[in-house]
Length: 94
Image (cartoon, rainbow, N blue to C red):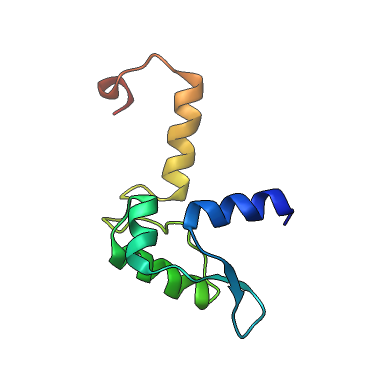
């Protein structure tokens, strides 16, 4: 990381960087202060820190919910039909 980005990060978080046991950068900022800085709750900061320490991605996962009633083959047929007849209504497709 270049020095310009590092200094701007320090000014945003108001602290200096340290190194954890694995040699990765670690911020010495209280969770509550980080939460206020980024507009999230302190519990979210704790969760993000735990995920990062475990080496897991911080990207959101797939949302839970009902599984699609339409399988892969049905979805493929629907997509083909949409390309062939883009103006067809739901009633016309059924």
